[in-house]
Amino acid sequence: MSTTFSSRPGFILSSAGSAIGLGCIWKFPYMATQHGGGAFFLVYIGLALTLGLALMSTEMALGRATGQGICGAFRSLGNRRWQAWAYLPVATAFIIMGFYCVVGGWSLAYVAGSLRGEVVGKDLTLLTSRFNALIANPGMAVMWMAGFLALTAAVVLGGIQRGIELMSRWLMPLLFVLMLVLIVRGVTLPGAWEGVQFLLRPDFSGFSFGTLLAVLGLAFFSLSLGMGAMVTYGAYLKPESDLPASAGWVVALTLLVCLLGGLLVVPPAFALGIGTQAGPGLTFISMPAIFASMAGGEIFAVLFFVLLLVAALTSSVSLLEVCVRFGIDELGFGRRKAVLIASAGMFALGVPAALSFSLMSDMTLSGRHAFDFMDHITSNIMLPVGGIATAVFCAWFCWHDLAAQLRHQDRSRSRLLLGARIVVGIVAPLAISVILLQGA
Ligand code: TRP
Image (cartoon, rainbow, N blue to C red; front, top):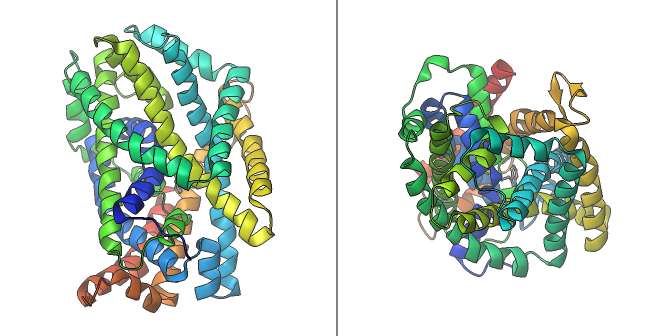
């Protein structure tokens, strides 16, 4: 593989760009509020630092050992039977994108709304009805979803390096700074402090296996694990970089942004009096309350939604790229054709997801409309199963090749490696299986 990331920070920022997205700023806050706040967050940190870190390191090692994406990696280090696992990540990426581009579309719509000065407001009823009007309008929902998908396709078509990498390098740090500023404003709103306490005080009274499954699913989703996204990035990491340390950086940055996302979105929700009931609309309903109480709030609103859109794009690009690579490597398509076909498929899935809040709200699969169903099967089933498969494969079929990647310079790290192998080969598959079976 001749292309590598130019520097270790470049690699870390790009991987973090894939991980940090709607998971941290949209999904984490509303899930944490639905599942009891502090306890959910604490378990999330625990899972991310153990299973998450170990799996992220091995996924990256798998990529660097083979110089290929997940299909190629399974093929070159495994056998024909393992190769069949290559279909799972592609299917997963497709389905995630189906609902991801709906939420990306909401962000795009809010960018447009904030430019027209129509986002900022203090009144909860008004903010909620604005959000509901957007998602319940079939034409709008599909149009914004398609717009987000088209943006993603344009970036993937135009080349990731110059487009997305440059963009994330400049705009992700800006997002970070902006979040800090907005948090300071948000937590000082009257009534907001209760939200901070809710988010940080662990209360395990309502905690169940179902909650554990939800945390696990979110950990995979937010760290982009379980479908080989990090394998692809690892393939571009220079041989001399310290791999576990890089993985540690990516996990730490993602955790940090999730914490910031929670502190950003949850306190104003308490200030508005929505408390814990808003669900997926939470970010879009509670943020305008911060803007309404700031000087220059209209400008901050534009800035925030543009940056949210960028965070979503740097992630959706990695999802589309997984499918595009599959088309190029396994089906022999050219890049253009692969992008077109993959996006068309994603659009086909995106339509029912976008219409889940209007025309198709009654069409359900096991009690869930299309949007929820796609979210549920990917986070709660496909990503964990993909994680188990990758873990078993790495620890028991090609550990020797991976261990060479996890060492750094002449340090043998034998204890660290043994620990990692136990976590990846035994603890992770067992723990994920138990959570899956009990939580389902
Ligand atoms: N991690 C991204 C987010 O939090 C979503 C994402 C991008 C993803 N690539 C992935 C999730 C691969 C699972 C697997 O928004």
